[in-house]
Image 1 (cartoon, rainbow, N blue to C red):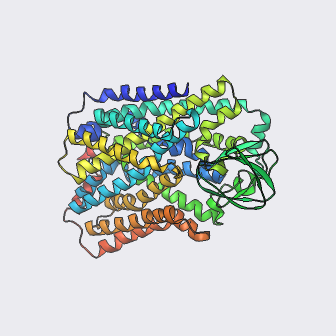
Image 2: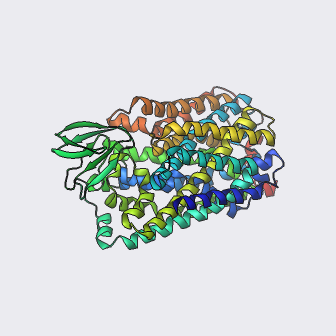
Image 3: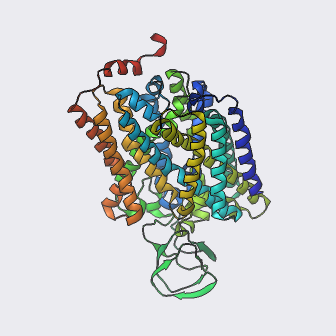
Length: 555
């Protein structure tokens, strides 16, 4: 049933996307659907594109892992569209650009800045795409027992073929359909779970108790190399072999399964917060227990709100609107659609903390949504809702991947290699998908949430300053924009890479380096302003500003 649900989603993606094939004759058709998408359809497509693996699976997983404070993520995701509505949507559409690098060159007249912007698009799209394909492989492994690579390859093939054939128009139809599908397949199982778990579980979800002992024999399959601190003598079955563990620190290798007996104390995990308890229930983020919850929460909000304004696959959506008014209406409708969806991740998160708290030990909290139905009901109903949620999760991977792959292909074929034809765009799409699949295959042990929030951090530190200053400040220069973007890229992506490969420090440094947007965004803004003040803006800056802010109907 689970495989059948996934196959249906993939087939629906290909069949609906085929509607865009006949209408694609030019680069404009491929990248912006000839700018003829209505606000309602566009908003549904934006919402479908935006509700990625991080939203469908990640938010609930973060609630289990980091506590109630993780619900600030959807607040930031949605609030970002309010900022986009107020500052960016209509002026971006009025430029007539096809991509963000197009806007950079049109506004500041620099071919080098266009190429730099294209490189930034590649960084953001890769950071965002790899988690989508990785989550597809991981979810199918958990619910269907397939090898990890199967889900990665299927997702990559479905997305690349759909996009290569139909471009933005195909992506729009598919993403709008998949938004409705994801909303239905997320809301109905959530209601079923609430009604099925019983009053005691609902009460425990609303008043959680810290996870300190196993209430039954519990197998924990570790997906990451994990350091455990055993506090009491315990007999554990490790990959089928019983081991007597004295109080000490132990290393659990990725891929191993440890079965803890009923009544055993839950071991401590460095940098992890046990579900339940006072700290977990506090409505602030404090990942890893660094001790600076207000600062950590502000860092996430800066990254998610301002990062949304800089995501290239979202920005290109506003170029598909007929005019600036249509772009604003698209952003406004999107806020309402996303708000409806984000009412429900908390249900999966708090129920997961009660029913599947051991996932925080294994590093598998990303799978809590698809694992809950089988825990609540081991019969046909549990299997049915697992299949529905798997289909919804796969729709999330595909919808977001379509937009990201389009942005990535456009950056290569349209911005780095100008004069691109539809044929080149199609070939680039297939090649880019193959490359991302190759990157996702060894990324099985990477945290989806870390990579996605890194993409938001890079977008907030690069494109957000470029767009806000480019739209609202006539003194911006090409040199100032370029230096500021380089500073923002190095301070956000560089710090994130260092944390992934060298390990994050503790305390205040863990907050400032774990999500650097809190300081990298002001640094990028300040750099752009200071460097620009030492130069001269383009001669056409005043005329460009008028074009950005003058209503098309009054010209």
